Image 1 (cartoon, rainbow, N blue to C red):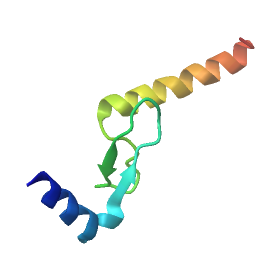
Image 2 (cartoon, helix red, strand yellow; image 1 turned 45 degrees about the vertical axis):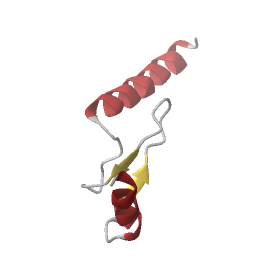
Image 3 (tube, helix red, strand yellow; image 1 turned 90 degrees about the vertical axis):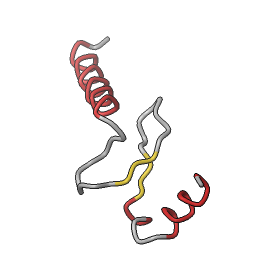
Image 4 (cartoon, rainbow, N blue to C red; image 1 turned 120 degrees about the vertical axis):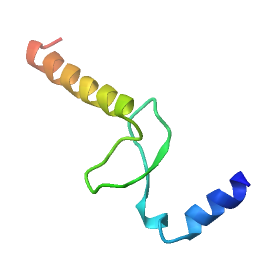
Length: 63
């Protein structure tokens, strides 16, 4: 049942909307329901935004 559903997704009309989420540690895939959606869940999006903010702060302080 699961394999049949996966095969339908990969070969069906929604296959072009399937995208990999590229932010570590998440290795999930998502079905883009909106053009700007980049994360598999709100939690992953929050984690990615926090990591970007931390990186910016670290660059500014020279740490």
